[in-house]
Image (cartoon, rainbow, N blue to C red; front, side, top):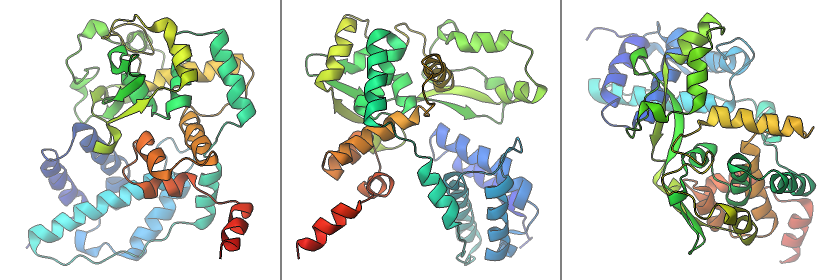
Length: 347
């Protein structure tokens, strides 16, 4: 059998996987293989890849892996790359009857601790202040901040939410869609939306991006390689129904008569993509001269408050749409010293 480089096999594998995974999943595989795997490991023969080479490459990714040269990739991104590589080489072994070796790759503990510290959460005081600002300037966008604080939904799920997903009578929100920008190999598909929305229904942000020709050449190429996708969430567990808390219900009441086909954060048929919504949120905090905490921090805040108040971990996991309770435990449950003391006193 002719020896194959990782890039040769990787491209063959990507063609095969395209028919078996969601478009958004395939786009993620393609993006990470094109941007990280092929440039760093593509010339290596598949069967020559070992733990030493991979460990060296992992450290490179963690220190200098970003395309713009501004530092390293997160541990989550590196884990995603390793997971994709593992699947790719597993399928190589199956196709050609080879036993592929198990890798021994380690991630630095120090960076793991730093990543945990970056999981910013609003203090109770900050949370109350944000809610006060939302009440003072209540509109479609600021209502979205409150929805995330009281439900913990992801930003893509929020931007895909329509008023038809809100049941005021049952006081519940149904999460069944997400919006995300995905990587494309073919630049001609730019700007489409998966579920057939008309071109004139796009968010004004995309129109502004097309008009603004002052961006760098690199950014211009990047826009041509992405598109907006409205699709089902990450996993089956992400499709869920969430009760509306009384405080959130009071904030949503003024919007009760909204057309069901209108998006919640725009109040129209036009969606707003997560990237633009994050920018608007950042500007809102800047205007209030508040500490900038990433929008995802609102989801972390919801989960953290639930755990602090003694909510059942399985319930919290289901509300967050996590694939497993273990993920919820690892992310949000960090016993304090007093908790440990109470535990040993039970014996």
